[in-house]
Image (cartoon, rainbow, N blue to C red; front, side):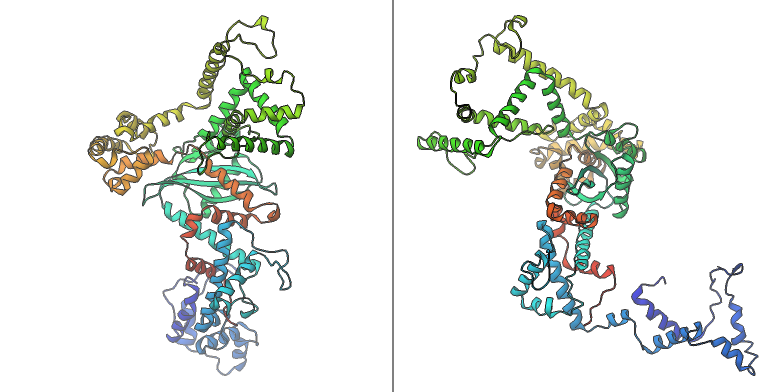
Length: 626
């Protein structure tokens, strides 16, 4: 059974042609039959050398042959059928299908693949509520296949009603198999692009529309052919709970599925949840127990947002400002009528400004602004809201006047204070407040105090190891002719990876750095680079990665470290698009397959139809005959 399935019958026929023989040198396996026993080669001497002595007793032959269904008769029947080619199996019949049948099957299969590939790239559904011939909407897949038939005569002759009833390749099971083949070939492209190189993992969990907890896993690595750092989505896994052990088990299972080694992890990027960054039982600690060089870095963008929001709540003046803005948004944007009123007043002002040439016209200019409630952990949304409030201040004021229907002293209340006027605190008696100007208050009591709080919060949130890694990484910045290069910092960075750089490699790296910097400063191609990623790409382009392997290894380890988890967040955005309320019953495996092909469109486009056909045919035996 060690031979390939398609070659086993040929091997058996070859043994038949050899005629009877005795495998004396073969060691037959032992079986537990009344003890450990096995077949002995000399037992065959009874019929070959010594002969059969009971020829005068025909009942001995009948006893050996047995009945119609005996082992002897069944074995003899299989022997004759195999020798003479009679009563062929289904496998043999499939292999002997005519070329016309095989070609028609291939056209029909590729037509289904083409339709499904389009739907996968667009993130659309496949099936309809009713798919019978009387239905007006049979689903996207059948509708697209029907459209393809009307524009391709060759496809029209071998699909749908022109195909055999049991071989139309349009059933839901066939669709799922093709989609699974597309996803596996896409991930195979990613794994092949990665090879055996180092990578970092980015993971996060989120609920889908069915309230299932889904773990998303992305890989960050440097392409071998281009030197470009990329982040690829590798898979989605449904987890029963969000404990660190469950998440680690899900990540390891995805690694095993794609033949990836956890020992190649050189970075981890998660959010700041306790199950992720816990020092004792967190996911990053469990990963670092197996791979000590897999350093964890909390998403910098997420840390910055959390810091800014936390500081805004600690400072009384900032808290008052954002509370006032939130109340303003609730009043103005509480109904569609009031939002429409803002749009009308804004449009009138824009038309008046264009008439007197106060504004420039052009593509992307004078866009309509809105007032959207900011998110708690998205500082960019707070910033955008404040900018829109400033731009729409006069419009908002008019809307408030219309809403209140009372203009008495409203203009005075909303008038901006003079910076040199005496500061009047909100909600407190001025007798207990130092007499200062608004300029002094905003500069000293608000601005400088917030800066001090920010510095303290940054020190608390960024640990010493991460900051040391970041400082060492910055010394390889090629901007301004490698002005920030520091040889000692590079060597210190190399000590963070003892499993990749031995003491001998460190001495070799020290020599390579001197030659490397002299080479970089002499070559004009490296003078206008702006970041480490462009440096990596230029090194690969000029083959310098081969000339300075240890230097390029350090650069690659720097680029691998994740500083943001935007790729994982984009996966969840794609998940809400693919698994929506209308497709809330999609299974975990089809959801993963659809997301891989939808998110990794670039890699999916590199997969050929022939690769999908080959994997589809290898999944199971399928009939190609009429």
